[in-house]
Image 1 (cartoon, helix red, strand yellow):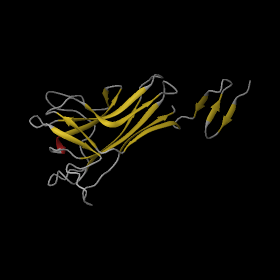
Image 2: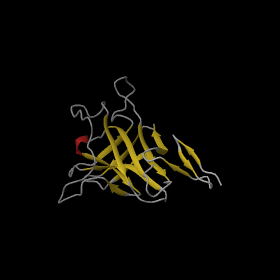
Image 3: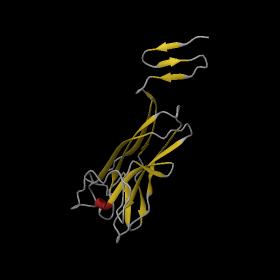
Image 4: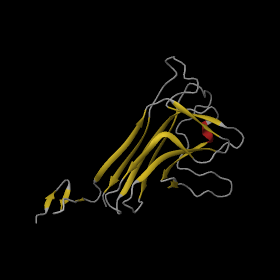
Length: 184
């Protein structure tokens, strides 16, 4: 029976299980979404997963924490400042304000809103948050959005502008979600 100690990786036990150092990255999973697409959001929509921004990870320990980083770029046919973005773990919103009264909750709104031009200048939202789910079952993390405008539905564009014309100043972009398991 031998135990192997590696100063950078951790301790390997006889059954080949690895006990990582606290704070080390155990695994990384990601989805880079490059397809220009859109989805419909009703006025005052329900929480809606953003197409292509989903990743599943199986924790190596129930004590692990997860760093979730996600970015969306695109536009909305209505005012993008009426959107809130958040992360869902297995369909449940995490690390957001608790909704009170008629207020919508999320982690962030758009990082840049150029409302004078809502057909050719992409907007973006970036989320970085920590989760401690206390499980070893597979976890699905998804970046999601809610249209908070109570009177206008929206076409929500991902990786493209509203007009998407074949002209240099109608940009196309990518969106991504990255999850890192961190040893405790």
